Image 1 (cartoon, rainbow, N blue to C red):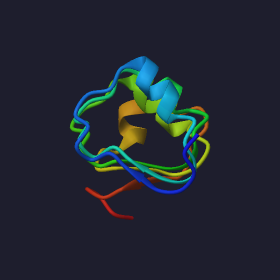
Image 2: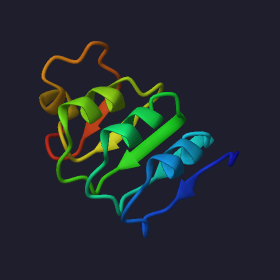
Image 3: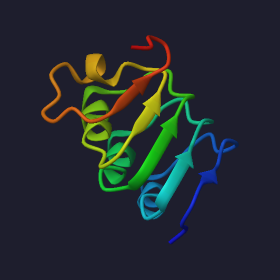
Image 4: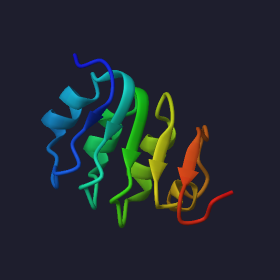
Length: 102
């Protein structure tokens, strides 16, 4: 388990197994800015991640994946408005949308 900030900007794809491993990262920011999409399974793996999750490269996401990211334990940063993709999130969490700030 890695503790502290972890920047994997060069990563452009992610398997469910890799997402489960990365979700064990704790107490820092996990930056996956090279990802343009995230599968439902990968997003679900990040629900229990402890720390900030940065996915600034995402260009699209499914409703299920958006809902999983909104259930993330801490902060998720993305340029997408996850709440719009999720329609009516069950439990909205902190979501910073850089495309439409505040």
